[in-house]
Image (tube, rainbow, N blue to C red; front, top):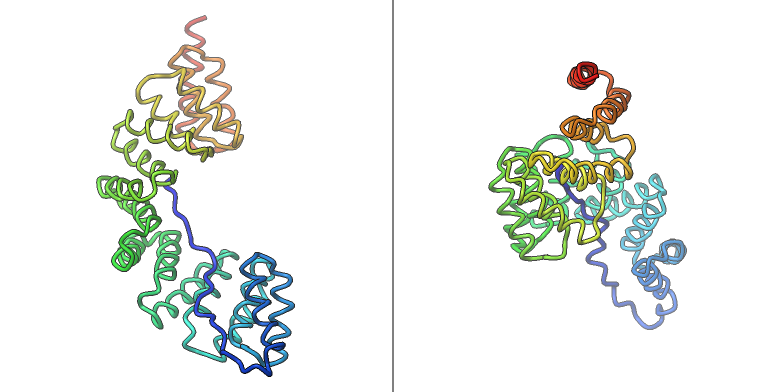
Length: 315
């Protein structure tokens, strides 16, 4: 499984109105809200933004800050309400549509999220964060060509946008364009050599292309960067299986299972490795577990029966 990232909240174009000196005390509530939000103190940001709204100072931006603070505190409905108020005040505020899209995304409301990004981009065609996130949503919906097009647009605007290259490599993999995926990962690595994601995606592309040594090198680099997750051990284990390095494969697949004990493909892959080492009892145990997790896969039943027959003949 290739890796794709999404942007987080964006707070832009909040500058204050330059109030006159007799409003300095009132304006401080808005400035305090900005500062609190920037410092991650979202409860204080809400309190100060509310006071700013009550005093009718920087109302539009105060609602924006408060709306995003609500969302970061997992108050979805309050966040949508405040961001909607921003749009009612200023229907051309692209950041409000964008941030409302992020709120919907956090709730896995992808159709609503997509509508918001579409509007943000309509208002601001160069809004890279909205283009980027729309690409992520389109990929999640299986629209890989359209997602790739959005990443193309991001890169045209920001040629050194590392994550756009990473995510485009993911959609290229989904489209079977593995050489293009590798090229994107190469450039992302050049831009951010300590980022694990391009190594992971490039390793996946190499694995599909049967360039197993290169795939293993990339997955090993991911592990060196301390980005340890189930998939990297599973895929490196799969690469070792292809090279018939079954002991190494079993170590990695066991690590994947240690991290995620419900990973059916890791059990079946390890079971195959055990079978190749003539450790049939362990192989059968792994296929039993794989079948428990995925009883409808006929290949798992076939392999278990094959190994069981092999074991019976050897006795």
